Length: 451
Image (cartoon, rainbow, N blue to C red; front, side, top):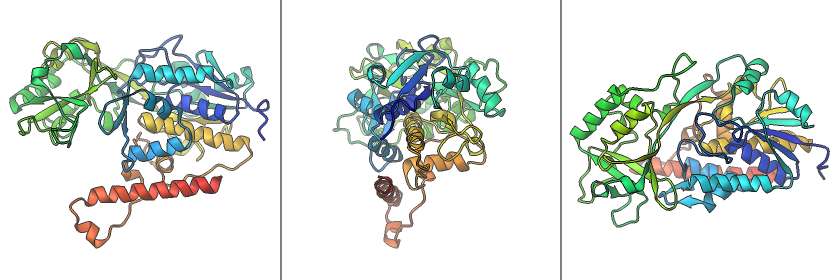
């Protein structure tokens, strides 16, 4: 039986990971002090005062049980994920993806945490976690400072954890007002779904001339410049669309603007397609999928109005570039995400070297679960690499050159196909399904053995 009065945990940051960590521990009977700074001063990427803000996109990726993100979601659900509970309550149509109304989702998380009897929310800027543990009489701390660690906390990390650089740059996509779109030039269709199926994505087709003119303007347009830092270091899976254009005029056609599976109503295929996803349940706003950008605000309005149907578009939010912080986990952290030099200090979320909403949230659960075991005088539980959480932890603990990663099948052990399966034209899909099935089996057995 846990003595609730003997152990208190400090959680720094009420983003995806911090919210999960605080909720998990509180549900296990552990008092939590949750410190969040955004109500006092938002960072450049934040727009609202509530917790677990989705700053880049409103999508938590695939719900498909046989996808990598679907696999991770099933494991998070097994641990009682607060993020997934809130997301499912405030989901908006997005095909196979779990997309949410950002404000309702964040409000749900905030209300749940603030109303929990074992969670004390403190509005303050974290400067020195060691001192804060003493101030709040906490035995442990989980640092989940999110995509933009504040300068004072960053200074502590640089001094007490690592003096190496630990950042890269990320970019946010713009959001348009649905009432200002020209729907005569747009069509609804989800990728690879038949035309008679209901669709959640709005598509803006381009012919070759339109596309190449658009790419040229993306290259020539004025960009925001990095301030106080030497160079841009973007996550490869979240590149600004203007940077794609600079890499080659066809780069975007094989990425965020690929037309495959998005045939026009007459059955023809466009040269390129811009997809717009509902930003909320009412469909009163759409975000431009994959259109993270470095363009200045003025140039965004000018260039993005070149997209068919967006000639008179009103932008509710414009895109921006922000810095994301992360550690070299392999050198600095133990397998349970505690520091090698300070075992009562844990890190969780994107700062550990993962990328993405569900990935960050899952690492919040993972760190909290491991800390809960430590409080019970149990050894750290090494998650099998065949599981979603296990493969993410294995990645950050073995990656020679830290590069943040999403959950993907490349992180999971491969499975050999039979000769008959290898001859099947759908062999890639079959292989992923088999890997996902194996992962679920291993996870269920792992959890059962722990219990």
